[in-house]
Image 1: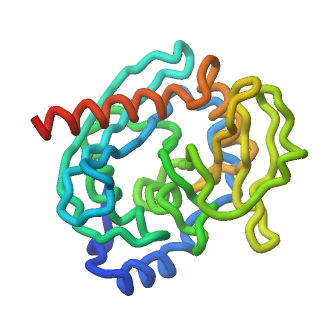
Image 2: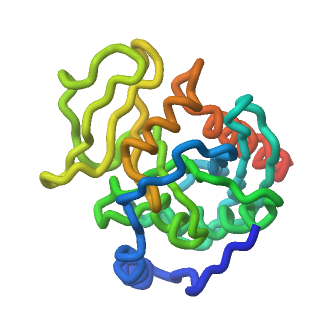
Image 3: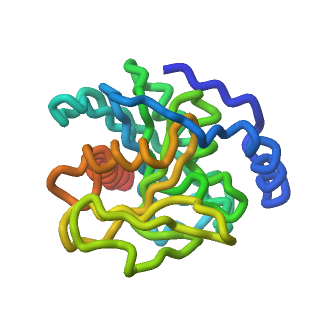
Length: 233
């Protein structure tokens, strides 16, 4: 899969902030996105240590799932050393270089990317999912285990699978808390590029028939940890 990066990777916080500001208008959150994606890729990164150091080993995994059978059809990985410091709101720059390398090793071109992170639900409205979507030109959304910004009304979130509540920050809906299984903690979905929130949530729910996390996230998380352990050994 071809992924062109039309900019240098930032070296410091100032460059990263400027790049987010420059690229933010390119992210399209209106969608509608793919109605029936056949191939959906999950992306995740595992860190050595506590994930806060510079120069620590990281491993990225991309797992492509055939939605008709929820079957993995392709896996790619990449490892690297982190080159950007730990700065809240700029975490994407620790992950993007190694994720791009893993994406470039794919033979298939997915219809949708689901990354372990946030998109619009970001202080500057340009999280990891947005940046990945702009770079690849593919519909992209973030599916996070924990919220980063915003809040939702817990009374609006029912206990059953499929119930949801808007995640709001500064009066703006930036994502959605989505319960994928009865009685479990929700996941936090936000748009990245070329897909709207309703469509993104529908695909996340369809990819999570048994567990809290969608199969794309589960498989990518497992693979990234395995590759990181092997690299450490």
